[in-house]
Image 1 (tube, rainbow, N blue to C red):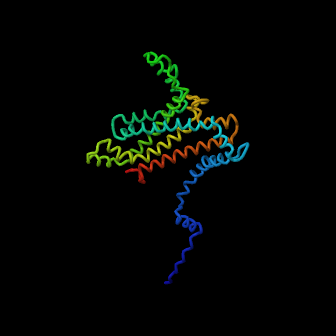
Image 2: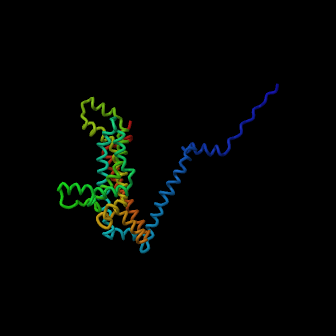
Image 3: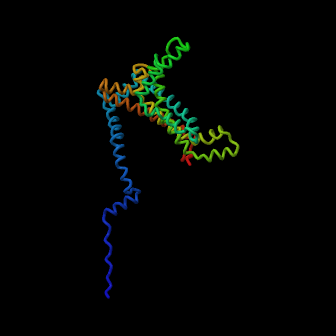
Length: 304
């Protein structure tokens, strides 16, 4: 009986070698699933950003930095920075601080928890316009709030709470608190509860447990929450127009960019204002993230 000599296997095609070489570098075919997301980011975020950045250095008159110098040399334009910071920083800080005790209590189990959570996040569904309309109806000169104060003889004339700083501030609180609450609640839910129980067995009270264990572990989440709510508040535009005074005390930097683009049709100048707006946000975020490292230097945030 003759013995058949096995035919040597054919060498793998070049395509396999190419895939193996990519796999050795940590790139496999599953990473190609990120291609649609990468294209989405490039087309909707990176391209508009770099286009606007390049446009800001192409002013209609002067050198490449003339629009930036024009903005900072004009006090009427420059003051929009402080106006926006005066709204965004307190609103973001209040949203974060107010959400901590509520989320701390909500992380446990109790009757009616779902109903309370729904009531706290309902403002997300209202939108800025509906929120502004509600503020005008409730806090306006002829709104319920002033009518009650007048009926109780607590004031002789309506208290001005809309079409000024307070109207925009209340709008930012109403629209920003649900986001801060949900983020803080998610971070608190990720902290291992056995850490607090262990401290309780050693005689630590609830305030000691919160201050020495929960708060330091929660600090990275609070910093991130503050950054997100600050960016949301810093880009305020509809509220500043609907319940603020866009020509006066609530003329924020986004209104300055809008007027430059769609009233003066000076797109390079509007792009320069938008770049300044983004730079200020990055500076605030960098300061917050640096301050976070002073409270917590771990890598996991205490999540179990």
